[in-house]
Length: 137
Image (cartoon, rainbow, N blue to C red):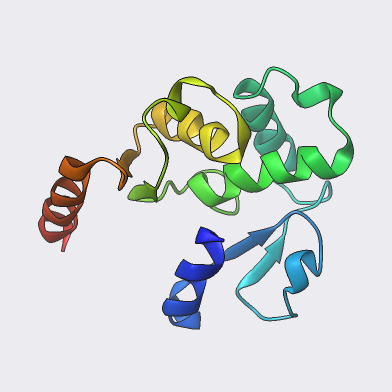
């Protein structure tokens, strides 16, 4: 839900939305929707990063692997070489220790690549996020 909420407010010229497969969640055929398949030049790198951050990756069904690959693309771009500036999320402080689900997979990737994260569930993080984005312009 958070992905869709952010996507609604960002102009098309400023967003890339990575999908695990064409038509995922009813996504239409727009330029900012991208499906990265096994034929993509960076597919092996993307899969390697996804697998390094999820201990069950190679045991998953292909669709679930594609969801994990998508997390890599969201964090690091189409070729996994252009990290985002920051990750904004909402999660209980206890949930962060569970290492479960797509959010935590993404957070592990962010940590490895030095991407700043902001958990808006924590009051101080909102102020830190505002300062961060004011500093980077």
